[in-house]
Image (cartoon, rainbow, N blue to C red; front, side):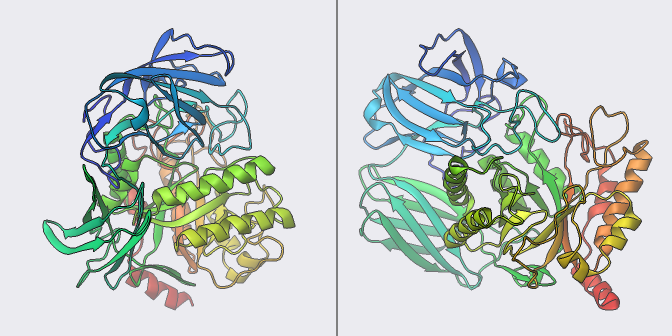
Length: 576
């Protein structure tokens, strides 16, 4: 293993850790090609894992290039097992060559992939070459990446190529390809594994240094499962983020050993809120787009992710809506470890056609699989503000497609599902609404009567959408304001929602008054403030783009800390 460019403090993926790995971040040869068929001329260098558009890459070219190439050498030692090559994310279509041979391809800018390169490597130095094709296509999942050559509104500079870490692993003769842990509050744990071949599987569960269970799964195909029972289980929550560790060993010569962890927690929903392990928890969340000034979608390093998670908690939030992005493995690990609820959101496409439907279905399946073992992830958010399904309000075709994605996700996982965050919901488990009204009195008046809000109110009048799409109705879901705020300060050089606050004092007063208004609505059981940081031309964060708080953190905490469950319950009883 090695550490380069701030990556290496942690293993590349703490949820799927092999001890024998080699980071491949750092200097690579690079070129921009005129076409995908043109022979690459490696005439410059780039720092991986930063995209060429970012300053940290050493290039900082924000213009669109549809074909880019990467090349570097890497060492391989003698090994009798498999040698695996991991890419955490490449945007958008990657073709990978090892020593001139095609090793594999992958489509999708937000999903990880792994290639078995054992047949293509030799002992000693090897050459890795990657061609990446990208475009401004609205059919592929873009998230907040712009779909034209200039930035506009809340869409930012595109990200092209490798933008998350790359690493090499030495695995066993038969290796673990993926696994899923299902843990119930009664201590029942089910382990499902997919292997590269048939082999025995051994697993040990630890609570700290103490082994609390060991089991064996006999040979029985490439998909195998085992069960465990933990006595007196310690449950995971944001307040008490207890994690169990697990070692999984696949027999062979050499054997494959993977280290992981899991949390035991139970999510349930009632009309009055989200319950974690039977306790109702007000969801006091912050919207986080995960951008940085010099590295854009890529975190500068792992310490930057640590600082973000720690700061979010210090400012009084118990959750984060990771908006239109699949973040680094390390981010979700830190949320698991430190205790922060996460809404897992699928990045949007921006047109409804056959290509988009295929892309969205494939990538949603991959993203759910990629994040499903994280206890911090407590719901799936499929579509945002009708992006990509702009006629969902009354289009039977678009409603049927969203329902098909919803059904697929429910078959893959048991977390709550939000079909279209903001308005025009279908059968969402949470009714999540967006409201950027800046006048707290108007805000309070508009949300005074729950029956009106869930049936007739026009949500965010710029878009004229009601809570539910045609043919769908409220059926007792918990109600949240999943976007609100967005306050900017005059003179910041960008935009926010409504008129900018005159100065820092006015900013503090408006943020406080809007936040208090949301918390005062008796039937609203959670909210998400927009947003954590300024992002490029959008300057409505609680922090600047380089993470400087606009208010003292203790003031922010005083504004946003959720009420205690007892205090809120007493207020709800008084207000009816």
